[in-house]
Length: 81
Image (cartoon, rainbow, N blue to C red):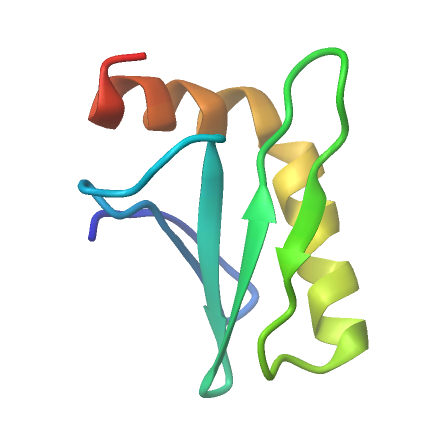
């Protein structure tokens, strides 16, 4: 499970044996959420907030938005798609 980014206590990971659509797992304060990365035509979308607090999920989505292109590139590099 490569960590592709760390910011403000959040850790963004992509599992090597994971499935489409492209997404990251976000770990923060003992909680985990899943966010679809999206692409140039689609914003990131929360697919599973898990036990993460709503304000932390919103912050994680903003971080994914800022780094969307790089996160999508990491997904493609890991999964070859």
